[in-house]
Image (cartoon, rainbow, N blue to C red; front, side, top):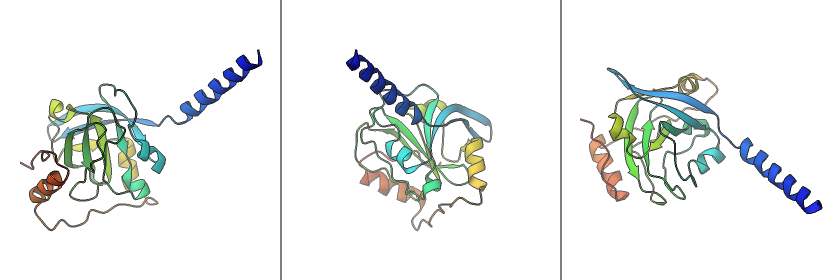
Length: 189
């Protein structure tokens, strides 16, 4: 009886810890001048711990789901990787105005190669691999999310400013893609 009671207490404690780590979620949309292209319910990775774990160890990601990394909140660099991430992801790198300025499609699961945009991102949205192409998401589209919009204007939050890019963006994107041994992301055309 004692063993059963002890096992029950341990299971309940583990369940409480697991549940307490669930992230806040928010609805967001991706739109261009013609209107909304896609809508997602995303988890918000806002702390260093949440961002370090990201979508690691997950077997799948629901349709129209993803994770939004608040890099500006902790002043993190925008280098990403797929270590311990079992699903292919599209990564949308977003500037402080909510505009998608760089896209990395179909990141290879479990890869430790760094995915580095041409300049630091304010936020990164990770969605299922292939979603970018499926919904026609392109450079210049805008992420609309109450959390993102509120966070961008918060006076007490540090803002990661983009550094000047000396080379043309297309040239920089190709160089970064070559370093990662991946095809270049969508062009700016």
